[in-house]
Length: 283
Image (tube, rainbow, N blue to C red; front, top):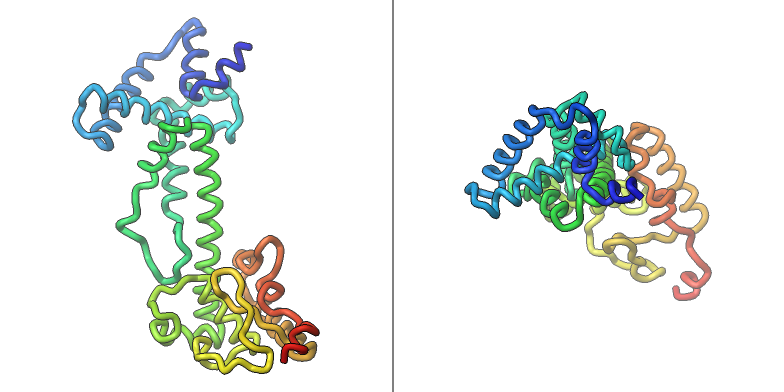
């Protein structure tokens, strides 16, 4: 029952409760560092040191330190381990655990656009997390941060893959010469750019992937995802396209190859499909 009560508290509060029960109690340095950190957070993110601002700053400090403790236990509820972490790292060290995790996520792109560079107007992730933690608690915030980091990591892999294809394939170099002409932007969406590079590389499209379609006897192309066309080919052409695709994939650096998969389905199997009997009948 006691553990259940502890589990409902922020990790920092649970660790301090254990410290209070020990003969030495709470180290004075913890008190001083907590007070200094709360004042620093209040001034930086909540303005003047009014009563309400100080209360918000203290809550943000507790949540930030709790995220650091959760990182130290890999998200598990481990009050004794949290206390040990505080004793070994101190308040500032626990804060560093949280800040490093947040900075690592914030350094990743949250939108898959190639050649876009850093967005200086992007909202502060730390502020967003502190706001989220004030409403949902540090445990949910830590889980959210891990999910966000994983998603942004995939976004970065997609961007890196697309930029690699632009630089290292003939079709990519053709499109790279004039991004504005081919994509309407100097920083195109990575999914769209990757799709057009690969359709050129597979021999499905020619020269200009944005040229107006004349619609062959199969009619307009099917659409998938964000209006990316699905192409259906007869057996011989399908085999040739797959051979080109697999030869290209073999040249892609291994750490980028997962960017070509979606739920374990390759780009090719999503967008280059066999021509069906119904498609022939429509023709």
